[in-house]
Length: 366
Ligand code: HEM
Image 1 (cartoon, helix red, strand yellow):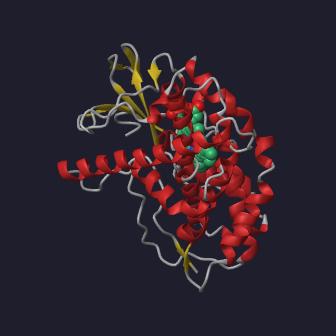
Image 2: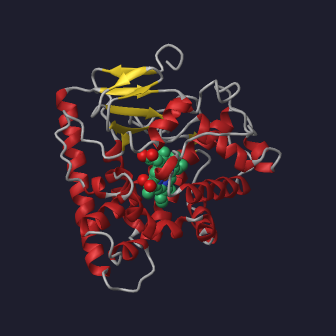
């Protein structure tokens, strides 16, 4: 695709697809030409009233700064580093709960770990994590068979999940407004620069962005290391763990694509794009671009430099990147300390059912 049609139009989705590294970076970072304030899919029946459309991820500068600035400090690497002991305790206790020789690492470990961590930051009950997962999944899911009926059901499920999340967080925000608690819901509730809908959009965004993505990073890293037969090399330190995680981010990018809308007539790689047309920037493809990465389809655990853009680029660069990296590092080192011989149980995998999320529903190990 990158060679033959680096920019191509998808009639069904009525969107331009952009595949090459430089062009993907431009689409993600040039907010004046490619806005994050994208309209809902024409056929989805969705409306623009989702609180997420009032969150930082859907808003361009200068408004974007107002929606991100109040929380930026909390996610800086120094602030996030303080969470390490807590994340280690969570990882240890999840591994304590694993029974039997064979287990699914996704349901036992890579799914609950990030949800429990983000629930603690928001100070919401981690026991409700199955519900949080259903809500999050509904927002990124797409039916495997796309008929009118499955699309309608998918949209219904999405709308219902947004309604449930909204009611949950609206109550929490109301309860905590004016309080001196130290969690992110309280931070949002007391952020005077934000309207109530923006406060709600922030809470929903964090809950969703903070879990599915990191779950898939942990899963994809274990999957890639096992497939490459380097689990023990990473565990013993013979292969640098941090670099190997960066390569997992590049090789199996948990977020495959992000959307924008053209604000004016423009051109990408010689292809004309009209104002108001949708543009999908394929991060997963950019991270395999042969003009940037040598042997891009090979997993090279100590690839250096590794200029992947799995966390995006520009003003919308992932707020949670330091947290995701810390969680993945702790998850892997705790797992390796506990098990010195882990292997993939089989090689048939069920991918996550979403066009933009890359990961596995389950990954049996023994
Ligand atoms: C933005 C990926 C983990 C919160 C983004 C973007 C990407 C991304 C590609 C850019 C979106 C765009 O340009 O439109 C990932 C990946 C993760 C991860 C691959 C894990 C491996 C997290 C975590 C959190 C988080 C753990 C929070 C706890 C956010 C937020 C934004 C964002 C709030 C919006 C930033 C903005 O619009 O300014 N993420 N993310 N992410 N991410 Fe992450």
